[in-house]
Image (cartoon, rainbow, N blue to C red; front, side, top):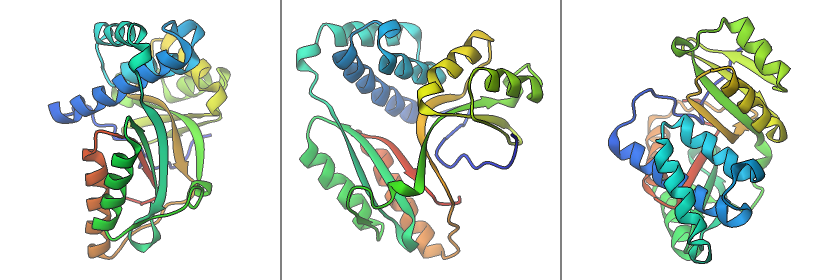
Length: 242
């Protein structure tokens, strides 16, 4: 079950600067608000909220911040107007890019995303134009240094809980699940006291594409940087072999 795996979708750095952490907390705060609006404030009865809370904890969001976000959203349900929207397109050399956004103004978000692609020599495509190149999976990243279990024991814990695959890297482990089994696997690892650097349902590329042209690399990085700076953008998935 072990093998080489690229974590191109996950920025699993131990220390995030204040700006990056602030962006992540903003993203998660919006997700909490939407989850509460759709399914209520009790994570035991709201799978989506439980998943967002897991993501929050994996990103070191303080428990009191999470609880405040839930309470605020519960008391402000009628004013939560965010909606999810997904864009698909191509970067330089045909790199596939998927952008997930959560916005209260789709026209603004669409214009900003389109501008980011254009400035990086890419273009927006039609829905479904690149998503078939990705698999939707639950993905949990664990820091080797912080995990007290041996790799084989960790793998068996994950597989027994319903995980599909387990991969080892030099500095981390990756657990992959079917999206429907993600919460059960996450809870099993959490119950076993295993610290998680990242825990979320994500899009995993089926194949990765390497770029050798320096101009293409710079253009693609321009797209990704502009998208990362946009507060409406929740996540960006791509098949660039970084």
